[in-house]
Image 1 (cartoon, rainbow, N blue to C red):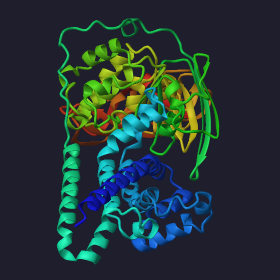
Image 2: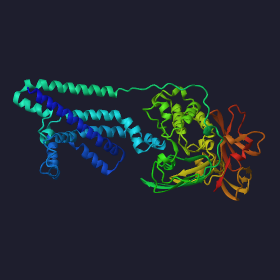
Image 3: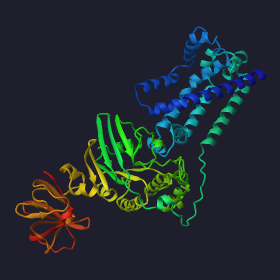
Length: 567
């Protein structure tokens, strides 16, 4: 056995496989990201080409490469045959046949990453390269490592394409083939043994690298943290927000505009109405066909997400799974350490700083997402249905907490929700959307009491929808009976109106005569009643222990609970 030749062949295979893997990593990882993030026919064709070497026999791959870079090809003539029968030829052959292993693994890993993680990172001030490096690559690295391992081993053991493109210098597989042909099977043991050792060493190294190693972060002091001046100061004055977006995609057209000066804003609509799409356009995460946006006199239309100083909390909270709570809260590029410490304490997260997102409850995840968003000086805080994944009790508690937080936040908050109770609690100005278009906008109380149409009233959760005639600026005729209403004066004429059952009370002091038609069983802690007032039949609510019987009764209705709209 030619041990010197064996050593030289082994060095050639190790070196060429390493160079080929580095080359594949340099070009293949960005390509895999594009394949995962840029759907379309062109990317589909490119993905097909990338996987082609897996379908070709190695000898066929080598033959194809000879057509492309051999002596007779244009590239071969240009390089004077430097890419065949040479070390670069071996690298080229190994890279060609092994590249799919890395690209496919990396593409699958990138495709499995929630794009909301990248979106949130962009709104936290990180540019595209930083988002790719600190989020996408950080989350996909284990799959990429496995792909690199397979790529290296495939290149190290490649024979068919190598023997066609670069018979010299001998790589280890070619050397093995020559040695077997000249000396037979006994000569194989010195070759197989080091090859096996190399494979085992690489596999062991990969397993070590794939083993998770979590750094533990000690919780910060539980002492009282003094609120930074920005958080402790009184809420500043109006901050005018003005935007107009038009965007047509996949058969859905979003055409929305709004001008407001209030700092607590709500966007209300049913699922698919365009609420979240509007929020993403405000954050700069999506592009509109026509766009204009300014905040407090600053034109933000052309600003990229990292430059908008907008904090974004998506429905999923988008916590980075590879970061502890401590690092999560401080992830923003321009994180303010004092603000981070304040909100960590204010939101009761000090004891959780060493945990990862998977170790947190939904309520804890929401608080971490809020703390992360608030730990930088932002002009806008965008909340996309932050309570949708929570149970009723937790939702009610966290709504109250957020309402308190809004008094401390310096910037403007925009809440997206489909829950009218949530919108009325957490917003002073409302924008109501349906099918991508604005139904109504204005102060929350005014929108609630004077919806523009029955569609708006239903979106606001209207019950007991009825018809009547406005006879004075503050009364509606219900077939001979007068219903008093609050709010702005009414125009004479036919109107639609509604009132919540809880605002209709039966009692001896009621100002309206009525007839109690039906008494139902207790549900949700209340007994539902069905009664007639004039020509209108309404649902009412009563305490479970009420002593009522069908027949004539008196009813009182809170005038400020009555919604009225033009018929």
